Length: 367
Image (cartoon, rainbow, N blue to C red):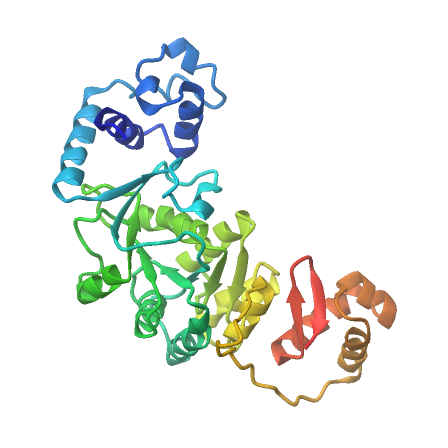
Protein backbone atom coordinates (compact mmCIF):
# COMPACT_ATOMS: atom_id res chain seq x y z
CA UNK A 1 0.00 0.00 0.00
CA UNK A 2 1.32 3.44 -0.90
CA UNK A 3 1.99 6.03 1.78
CA UNK A 4 -0.64 8.36 0.29
CA UNK A 5 -3.29 5.64 0.38
CA UNK A 6 -2.51 4.82 4.02
CA UNK A 7 -2.75 8.50 4.96
CA UNK A 8 -6.12 8.69 3.20
CA UNK A 9 -7.39 5.64 5.13
CA UNK A 10 -6.19 7.14 8.39
CA UNK A 11 -8.02 10.38 7.53
CA UNK A 12 -11.23 8.39 7.03
CA UNK A 13 -10.78 6.80 10.47
CA UNK A 14 -10.36 10.23 12.05
CA UNK A 15 -13.27 12.16 10.53
CA UNK A 16 -16.05 12.22 13.19
CA UNK A 17 -19.10 11.61 10.98
CA UNK A 18 -17.54 8.83 8.90
CA UNK A 19 -17.64 5.47 10.66
CA UNK A 20 -16.56 2.12 9.28
CA UNK A 21 -19.90 1.40 7.56
CA UNK A 22 -19.94 4.73 5.67
CA UNK A 23 -16.21 4.49 4.97
CA UNK A 24 -16.74 1.13 3.25
CA UNK A 25 -19.52 2.61 1.11
CA UNK A 26 -17.24 5.47 0.08
CA UNK A 27 -14.42 3.07 -0.73
CA UNK A 28 -16.70 0.84 -2.78
CA UNK A 29 -17.95 3.82 -4.81
CA UNK A 30 -14.59 5.51 -5.36
CA UNK A 31 -12.27 2.48 -5.56
CA UNK A 32 -9.64 3.78 -3.13
CA UNK A 33 -9.29 6.04 -0.13
CA UNK A 34 -7.19 8.53 -2.09
CA UNK A 35 -9.94 8.80 -4.72
CA UNK A 36 -12.53 9.71 -2.09
CA UNK A 37 -10.74 12.97 -1.36
CA UNK A 38 -10.54 13.74 -5.08
CA UNK A 39 -14.19 12.98 -5.84
CA UNK A 40 -16.71 15.79 -6.28
CA UNK A 41 -18.99 16.32 -3.30
CA UNK A 42 -22.20 16.05 -5.37
CA UNK A 43 -21.18 12.55 -6.49
CA UNK A 44 -20.48 11.42 -2.93
CA UNK A 45 -23.86 12.73 -1.77
CA UNK A 46 -25.57 10.21 -4.06
CA UNK A 47 -24.28 7.36 -1.88
CA UNK A 48 -26.90 5.88 0.44
CA UNK A 49 -26.43 7.17 3.99
CA UNK A 50 -24.08 9.98 3.01
CA UNK A 51 -25.30 13.52 3.72
CA UNK A 52 -23.84 16.99 3.97
CA UNK A 53 -23.07 16.50 7.68
CA UNK A 54 -21.23 13.27 6.88
CA UNK A 55 -18.85 15.06 4.56
CA UNK A 56 -18.46 18.25 6.62
CA UNK A 57 -14.98 17.32 7.86
CA UNK A 58 -13.76 15.55 4.72
CA UNK A 59 -11.21 18.17 3.72
CA UNK A 60 -10.47 19.63 7.14
CA UNK A 61 -6.74 20.20 7.51
CA UNK A 62 -6.71 19.03 11.12
CA UNK A 63 -7.58 15.43 10.13
CA UNK A 64 -4.92 15.35 7.42
CA UNK A 65 -2.31 16.55 9.92
CA UNK A 66 -3.46 13.97 12.47
CA UNK A 67 -3.21 11.19 9.86
CA UNK A 68 0.31 12.28 8.90
CA UNK A 69 1.34 12.28 12.58
CA UNK A 70 -0.07 8.78 13.09
CA UNK A 71 1.73 7.56 9.99
CA UNK A 72 5.01 8.76 11.51
CA UNK A 73 4.21 6.74 14.66
CA UNK A 74 3.42 3.64 12.58
CA UNK A 75 6.65 3.93 10.63
CA UNK A 76 8.84 4.76 13.65
CA UNK A 77 7.54 1.74 15.58
CA UNK A 78 7.22 -0.68 12.64
CA UNK A 79 3.54 -1.23 13.41
CA UNK A 80 1.83 -3.89 11.30
CA UNK A 81 -1.51 -2.81 9.83
CA UNK A 82 -4.20 -4.63 7.88
CA UNK A 83 -6.66 -3.08 5.42
CA UNK A 84 -10.07 -4.77 5.43
CA UNK A 85 -9.75 -5.83 1.78
CA UNK A 86 -6.27 -7.33 2.17
CA UNK A 87 -5.62 -11.07 2.49
CA UNK A 88 -3.99 -10.67 5.90
CA UNK A 89 -7.06 -9.02 7.38
CA UNK A 90 -8.87 -11.55 9.65
CA UNK A 91 -11.30 -13.40 7.38
CA UNK A 92 -14.12 -13.76 9.92
CA UNK A 93 -13.97 -10.06 10.82
CA UNK A 94 -14.01 -9.19 7.12
CA UNK A 95 -17.58 -10.53 6.95
CA UNK A 96 -18.79 -8.14 9.69
CA UNK A 97 -20.44 -5.11 8.10
CA UNK A 98 -19.10 -2.76 10.79
CA UNK A 99 -15.59 -4.23 11.10
CA UNK A 100 -12.81 -1.61 11.16
CA UNK A 101 -11.31 -0.56 7.83
CA UNK A 102 -7.84 -0.68 9.43
CA UNK A 103 -6.46 -2.93 12.16
CA UNK A 104 -3.12 -2.44 13.87
CA UNK A 105 -1.12 -5.39 15.17
CA UNK A 106 1.82 -6.27 17.37
CA UNK A 107 3.27 -9.72 17.94
CA UNK A 108 3.14 -12.91 15.88
CA UNK A 109 -0.45 -13.51 14.87
CA UNK A 110 -1.49 -16.16 12.34
CA UNK A 111 -5.25 -16.60 12.00
CA UNK A 112 -5.48 -18.28 8.60
CA UNK A 113 -7.11 -21.73 8.64
CA UNK A 114 -7.21 -21.82 12.44
CA UNK A 115 -9.94 -22.57 14.96
CA UNK A 116 -10.69 -19.35 16.82
CA UNK A 117 -12.86 -18.74 19.89
CA UNK A 118 -13.39 -15.67 22.05
CA UNK A 119 -13.75 -15.93 25.80
CA UNK A 120 -15.06 -13.04 27.89
CA UNK A 121 -16.54 -12.42 31.31
CA UNK A 122 -16.55 -10.37 34.47
CA UNK A 123 -13.50 -8.48 35.72
CA UNK A 124 -14.36 -9.79 39.20
CA UNK A 125 -13.76 -13.45 38.51
CA UNK A 126 -14.64 -15.95 41.24
CA UNK A 127 -12.85 -19.17 42.12
CA UNK A 128 -15.55 -21.00 40.12
CA UNK A 129 -14.78 -18.93 37.01
CA UNK A 130 -11.02 -19.33 37.49
CA UNK A 131 -11.32 -23.10 37.79
CA UNK A 132 -13.54 -23.29 34.70
CA UNK A 133 -11.07 -21.26 32.61
CA UNK A 134 -8.18 -23.53 33.56
CA UNK A 135 -10.11 -26.76 32.96
CA UNK A 136 -11.65 -25.52 29.70
CA UNK A 137 -8.27 -24.61 28.22
CA UNK A 138 -6.65 -27.84 29.43
CA UNK A 139 -9.38 -29.89 27.74
CA UNK A 140 -9.52 -27.96 24.46
CA UNK A 141 -5.74 -27.50 24.09
CA UNK A 142 -5.28 -30.64 21.90
CA UNK A 143 -7.26 -28.86 19.15
CA UNK A 144 -4.79 -25.96 19.26
CA UNK A 145 -7.38 -23.17 18.97
CA UNK A 146 -6.56 -19.47 19.11
CA UNK A 147 -8.00 -17.79 22.19
CA UNK A 148 -9.26 -14.21 21.83
CA UNK A 149 -10.05 -11.94 24.75
CA UNK A 150 -9.80 -8.34 25.93
CA UNK A 151 -6.67 -8.51 28.13
CA UNK A 152 -8.65 -6.97 31.01
CA UNK A 153 -8.81 -8.02 34.65
CA UNK A 154 -10.75 -11.13 35.62
CA UNK A 155 -11.88 -13.67 33.05
CA UNK A 156 -9.90 -12.07 30.19
CA UNK A 157 -6.47 -12.42 31.72
CA UNK A 158 -7.36 -15.75 33.38
CA UNK A 159 -8.21 -17.36 30.04
CA UNK A 160 -5.21 -15.81 28.28
CA UNK A 161 -2.80 -16.95 30.99
CA UNK A 162 -4.24 -20.47 30.81
CA UNK A 163 -3.84 -20.40 27.03
CA UNK A 164 -0.17 -19.42 27.33
CA UNK A 165 0.45 -22.14 29.91
CA UNK A 166 -0.76 -24.70 27.36
CA UNK A 167 1.19 -23.20 24.45
CA UNK A 168 -1.85 -21.81 22.65
CA UNK A 169 -1.81 -18.68 20.56
CA UNK A 170 -3.75 -15.92 22.31
CA UNK A 171 -4.72 -12.46 21.10
CA UNK A 172 -5.65 -9.46 23.20
CA UNK A 173 -8.01 -6.92 21.63
CA UNK A 174 -7.17 -3.49 23.01
CA UNK A 175 -9.33 -0.43 23.58
CA UNK A 176 -6.41 1.95 22.99
CA UNK A 177 -3.34 2.39 20.82
CA UNK A 178 -0.32 0.09 20.73
CA UNK A 179 1.85 2.69 22.46
CA UNK A 180 0.47 1.75 25.88
CA UNK A 181 -0.96 -1.16 27.87
CA UNK A 182 -4.04 -1.10 30.05
CA UNK A 183 -4.26 -2.20 32.75
CA UNK A 184 -0.64 -1.42 33.60
CA UNK A 185 -0.51 -4.42 35.93
CA UNK A 186 -0.65 -6.66 32.84
CA UNK A 187 2.53 -5.32 31.25
CA UNK A 188 4.33 -8.39 32.62
CA UNK A 189 2.35 -10.59 30.22
CA UNK A 190 2.98 -8.59 27.04
CA UNK A 191 6.23 -10.23 25.93
CA UNK A 192 4.89 -13.76 26.38
CA UNK A 193 1.69 -12.99 24.48
CA UNK A 194 3.56 -11.32 21.62
CA UNK A 195 5.89 -14.33 21.37
CA UNK A 196 2.96 -16.61 20.52
CA UNK A 197 0.08 -14.36 19.56
CA UNK A 198 -0.18 -10.64 20.05
CA UNK A 199 -2.48 -7.66 20.17
CA UNK A 200 -4.99 -6.15 17.76
CA UNK A 201 -6.60 -2.72 17.88
CA UNK A 202 -8.31 -0.22 15.63
CA UNK A 203 -7.26 2.67 17.89
CA UNK A 204 -4.46 5.14 17.27
CA UNK A 205 -1.52 6.02 19.50
CA UNK A 206 -3.53 9.10 20.57
CA UNK A 207 -6.41 6.96 21.92
CA UNK A 208 -6.73 6.33 25.64
CA UNK A 209 -8.61 3.45 27.32
CA UNK A 210 -11.94 5.26 27.63
CA UNK A 211 -15.28 3.57 28.29
CA UNK A 212 -16.68 4.01 24.78
CA UNK A 213 -13.54 2.44 23.32
CA UNK A 214 -14.09 -0.75 25.30
CA UNK A 215 -17.64 -1.04 24.01
CA UNK A 216 -16.44 -0.43 20.44
CA UNK A 217 -13.64 -2.96 20.92
CA UNK A 218 -16.15 -5.67 21.82
CA UNK A 219 -17.32 -6.04 18.22
CA UNK A 220 -13.77 -7.00 17.21
CA UNK A 221 -13.62 -9.69 19.92
CA UNK A 222 -16.94 -11.09 18.67
CA UNK A 223 -16.11 -10.73 15.00
CA UNK A 224 -12.72 -12.44 15.03
CA UNK A 225 -14.04 -15.82 16.15
CA UNK A 226 -16.57 -18.47 15.22
CA UNK A 227 -17.89 -18.64 18.77
CA UNK A 228 -17.96 -16.47 21.88
CA UNK A 229 -17.90 -17.99 25.37
CA UNK A 230 -19.14 -16.04 28.41
CA UNK A 231 -17.68 -17.55 31.57
CA UNK A 232 -19.10 -15.29 34.29
CA UNK A 233 -21.12 -12.09 34.09
CA UNK A 234 -23.32 -10.00 36.32
CA UNK A 235 -26.80 -9.06 35.12
CA UNK A 236 -25.27 -6.20 33.12
CA UNK A 237 -21.77 -5.91 31.70
CA UNK A 238 -19.51 -5.58 28.70
CA UNK A 239 -19.31 -9.33 28.16
CA UNK A 240 -23.07 -9.41 27.54
CA UNK A 241 -22.61 -6.68 24.94
CA UNK A 242 -20.00 -8.88 23.25
CA UNK A 243 -22.40 -11.83 23.37
CA UNK A 244 -25.17 -9.74 21.78
CA UNK A 245 -22.84 -8.60 19.01
CA UNK A 246 -21.71 -12.17 18.34
CA UNK A 247 -25.36 -13.22 18.19
CA UNK A 248 -26.06 -10.41 15.68
CA UNK A 249 -23.19 -11.71 13.54
CA UNK A 250 -24.84 -15.17 13.52
CA UNK A 251 -21.95 -16.63 15.47
CA UNK A 252 -22.39 -19.27 18.15
CA UNK A 253 -22.60 -18.00 21.72
CA UNK A 254 -21.98 -20.18 24.78
CA UNK A 255 -22.53 -19.37 28.44
CA UNK A 256 -21.30 -21.17 31.55
CA UNK A 257 -24.24 -21.66 33.96
CA UNK A 258 -24.07 -20.93 37.66
CA UNK A 259 -26.27 -21.00 40.74
CA UNK A 260 -29.31 -18.73 40.62
CA UNK A 261 -28.08 -16.91 43.74
CA UNK A 262 -24.62 -16.11 42.36
CA UNK A 263 -24.30 -12.46 41.29
CA UNK A 264 -21.71 -13.18 38.63
CA UNK A 265 -23.73 -15.98 37.07
CA UNK A 266 -26.90 -13.95 36.49
CA UNK A 267 -25.79 -12.72 33.07
CA UNK A 268 -24.85 -16.20 31.86
CA UNK A 269 -28.03 -17.77 33.23
CA UNK A 270 -30.11 -15.10 31.50
CA UNK A 271 -28.38 -15.70 28.17
CA UNK A 272 -29.24 -19.39 28.42
CA UNK A 273 -32.81 -18.69 29.60
CA UNK A 274 -33.40 -16.26 26.73
CA UNK A 275 -31.94 -18.80 24.28
CA UNK A 276 -29.25 -16.34 23.21
CA UNK A 277 -26.52 -18.78 24.21
CA UNK A 278 -25.91 -22.52 24.37
CA UNK A 279 -25.31 -23.96 27.81
CA UNK A 280 -21.62 -24.81 28.26
CA UNK A 281 -20.49 -27.17 30.99
CA UNK A 282 -17.23 -28.33 29.44
CA UNK A 283 -15.00 -28.05 26.39
CA UNK A 284 -16.72 -31.16 25.01
CA UNK A 285 -19.98 -29.20 24.60
CA UNK A 286 -18.30 -26.57 22.42
CA UNK A 287 -16.35 -29.12 20.40
CA UNK A 288 -19.51 -31.08 19.67
CA UNK A 289 -21.74 -28.12 18.79
CA UNK A 290 -19.14 -26.49 16.53
CA UNK A 291 -18.47 -29.78 14.76
CA UNK A 292 -14.78 -29.73 15.54
CA UNK A 293 -12.93 -33.03 15.21
CA UNK A 294 -10.13 -34.54 17.27
CA UNK A 295 -7.41 -36.53 15.57
CA UNK A 296 -6.90 -40.07 16.90
CA UNK A 297 -3.65 -39.01 18.55
CA UNK A 298 -5.37 -36.17 20.37
CA UNK A 299 -6.87 -36.55 23.79
CA UNK A 300 -10.56 -35.79 23.59
CA UNK A 301 -12.00 -33.86 26.54
CA UNK A 302 -13.91 -36.16 28.83
CA UNK A 303 -17.38 -35.13 29.92
CA UNK A 304 -18.39 -36.44 33.30
CA UNK A 305 -21.40 -38.73 33.26
CA UNK A 306 -23.98 -37.90 35.88
CA UNK A 307 -26.64 -40.26 37.29
CA UNK A 308 -29.67 -38.06 37.85
CA UNK A 309 -33.24 -38.95 38.73
CA UNK A 310 -35.83 -37.56 36.32
CA UNK A 311 -39.44 -36.80 37.11
CA UNK A 312 -42.18 -38.36 34.97
CA UNK A 313 -42.33 -35.47 32.48
CA UNK A 314 -38.56 -35.37 32.09
CA UNK A 315 -38.41 -39.14 31.67
CA UNK A 316 -41.08 -39.03 28.98
CA UNK A 317 -39.20 -36.37 27.01
CA UNK A 318 -35.84 -38.08 27.53
CA UNK A 319 -37.18 -41.46 26.35
CA UNK A 320 -38.69 -39.85 23.25
CA UNK A 321 -35.43 -38.10 22.34
CA UNK A 322 -33.42 -41.26 22.96
CA UNK A 323 -35.68 -43.20 20.62
CA UNK A 324 -36.12 -40.57 17.90
CA UNK A 325 -32.86 -38.60 17.95
CA UNK A 326 -32.69 -34.86 17.32
CA UNK A 327 -36.07 -33.12 17.49
CA UNK A 328 -37.47 -29.59 17.59
CA UNK A 329 -39.45 -28.37 20.60
CA UNK A 330 -42.85 -28.40 18.83
CA UNK A 331 -42.42 -32.02 17.76
CA UNK A 332 -41.45 -33.09 21.28
CA UNK A 333 -44.51 -31.34 22.74
CA UNK A 334 -46.83 -32.98 20.22
CA UNK A 335 -45.34 -36.46 20.65
CA UNK A 336 -45.37 -36.29 24.45
CA UNK A 337 -48.84 -34.70 24.57
CA UNK A 338 -47.56 -31.72 26.60
CA UNK A 339 -48.08 -27.96 26.23
CA UNK A 340 -45.18 -26.16 24.55
CA UNK A 341 -44.54 -23.85 27.52
CA UNK A 342 -44.09 -26.86 29.82
CA UNK A 343 -41.78 -28.65 27.37
CA UNK A 344 -39.68 -25.50 26.99
CA UNK A 345 -39.23 -25.15 30.76
CA UNK A 346 -38.60 -28.87 31.20
CA UNK A 347 -35.97 -28.94 28.44
CA UNK A 348 -34.12 -26.10 30.17
CA UNK A 349 -34.15 -28.02 33.46
CA UNK A 350 -32.93 -31.15 31.71
CA UNK A 351 -30.21 -29.14 29.99
CA UNK A 352 -29.06 -27.86 33.39
CA UNK A 353 -28.99 -31.47 34.62
CA UNK A 354 -26.80 -32.43 31.67
CA UNK A 355 -29.08 -35.09 30.20
CA UNK A 356 -30.03 -33.28 26.97
CA UNK A 357 -28.31 -30.63 24.90
CA UNK A 358 -29.54 -27.95 22.47
CA UNK A 359 -28.27 -27.91 18.90
CA UNK A 360 -28.22 -25.30 16.14
CA UNK A 361 -31.59 -24.96 14.43
CA UNK A 362 -33.46 -25.14 17.78
CA UNK A 363 -33.03 -28.91 17.93
CA UNK A 364 -32.58 -30.96 21.10
CA UNK A 365 -31.08 -34.41 21.66
CA UNK A 366 -30.53 -36.80 24.53
CA UNK A 367 -26.98 -37.21 25.80
